[in-house]
Structures are given as C-alpha cells and as structure tokens.
Amino acid sequence: MTLLDGDEPLPPDLVMSVKDLKVWYGTARGPVRAVDGVSFDIRRGETLGLVGESGSGKSTLGRGVLGLLPDAAEVSGKVLFRGRDRVTMKRRALRSLRGPELGLIFQEPMTRLNPLMRISDHFFETLHTHERGLSKTQMRKRAIDTLGAMGIPPTRFTNYPHEFSGGMRQRIMIALALVLNPAFVVADEPTTALDVLVEAQIIGILNDIKRNFDTSILLITHNLGIIAEACERVAVMYAGRIAEQGDARAVFARPAHPYTRELLASTISLSTTELHYIPGAPPDLIHPPSGCRFHPRCPDAMRVCPTRHPPTVVTELNQKVDCWLHGPDQLIPPGGKESLEREAIGVADEA
Image (cartoon, rainbow, N blue to C red; front, side, top):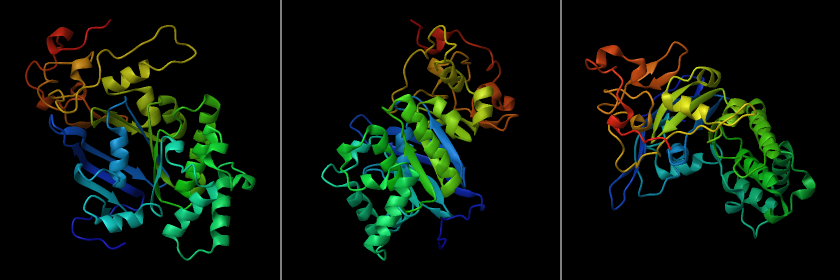
C-alpha cells in the first residue's frame, strides 16, 4: 500500500491508529458533537473494548473509523490504517478496503440479512464482489469453512435467515465479516438481545477469531462483563470523548476516572445487595458541559472541572485518563483541588 501526502508509517505491531477524530452532525439546533477528539491505537491480533452509556458516541466512532458515515457528517482528524489516512482517502479506494481489509459485525442480524436471499447467496454476493477470480466451487468451500468455524453446519448453507435462531444469525453475521479475512473488524454490540448462554458462545467465537485469524477487533458494548472476558484493553467513552483507556485488568482493578468507577459500581453481580446508579443523564451533545463533560454528574468534581477540559495524564498503571484528580498540578489554578458542594456545580440530586 503506497503512502501519500498526509499518511504516516505505523509501527509493525499497530494495525490502526486514530488521532483526534471528530465526527459532527449538522442539525437545526446546531452541530451534534458525536465524536469530539478521540485518539487510540489497536495492535495486531488485539481486541479493544469500547464501553459507555447509550448516546456516548460508540457506534458513531466505530462507523467513523470504517468510513461508513452519512455524507452530511463532518469528519476531521486521522484514522491511519496500515499507514494510510482513511479520512483523506478517496471514496473508491476506501470501498475497496471494506470487506477484504476492514469488516463490520452489525448489531441486529435480521436488519442486515436479506430475508429473500438464502445464506449461500449472501456469501456468494460478498465473495463475488471482492474476489471475482473465485469459482462458485471455491466460493462455496470458503463460505462453508468460515461458517463451520462459527459452528454452523454445511447442511444449513441454503437455509433462509428466518430459519435460524438469533444466536445462529449473529454467528452468520460474524462469518460474513470474516470470510474475506479482514485485518480489522468493528463488532458493534454483537451480543445485544441474546441470552447469557449464547452471549458466552459469541464471546468464545470472538476469542477464537483473535487466535485463528490474527484479526484486530474494536468491540463496542455497554456490557463490562463482555469487556472483561474478551478484551486486552478497554476505552471508556463519555459524551463523545474517551475518559479513560488502558489494560482491561488494570482499569477494572483500579479505575482512574470517576466515570469508570461509577460504571463499575453500577454492574450487578451475585454479591449485589443494592442497586447503584449514576445520577443525572448523559449531556446534550449539541450543547455539552464546559470543561470536563462528566463534571455535572461527578461525585469528585472540583472548581477547575467546569472551567477547562483536563489534559490526558498517564497513571502509574499506564492508564491514559482525562481527569483533574490526576493533575498535572502545575495546570490547576490556585484552590482548584478544593472540592465543591455538589449543588454548586449542577450535579443532579440523587433520588
């Protein structure tokens, strides 16, 4: 792949590097800042979990790195895939990457699988579009082998989508994303509406993908348990920005950002005796809060938090966190670390 002006060579272990990515949508009320300055790297064969509340911008970010946004979206920043900047890439060149190099596992299989087409037709269409030199026999073998890796027997190859359970349809979607052996896949809520047993099977399949296909995965979910089971690293997203990212075990053991801590406290386990929730609601992304966007809901908010967005700080556990609790002290105004009363900075009252 030839590097052009604006492209940057990546280290051999990196598949994708996202730098200061912004995705804004125009509305009658003003621009919606769905993704507002996000940066992260994904290594070869790694799964990065992207977690956050609904409306935090996770799905927009996933589609943004693949170039699957509507024409009206304003995009800036860099999405470097194998050194090429996806943001400045021409549409035709980008289309040629999707499928063979970049894949997407959709959230709802029944909205993506054509009910009038057999499963075999879905695979033939995909393979014929991107690998025209394959014969029908070769396409059939490739499709059946990929479906077999997902636990779908060859006898079901000519069935229609409605003849499969929800879990099997999700496996078919995964197989469709992998049949062209992409280097990078976005999995957008792949376990939504599935029961816990099927969810566990899908997690096992995602782990097998890393081992057998050497595929890098951006796993988008609101389920912290899935992140713990399937991801080496995690990025916590809030109101269009990454609040914290780092090794998944380190983040779960010692969350550095108050939002991460509150999310973890809100999960339910066998030892849960009472429910915990984050007061308030995610902000309006047309008019987001000033400074740190989490400060109206943060139990640790300080005088500095509403005034300016915190810089990214690396903790002792190598977690990247945007929070004034971690400094740098030289940038905090005098008295900035003096805690405020919650009502003084507009934190929602607890019910």
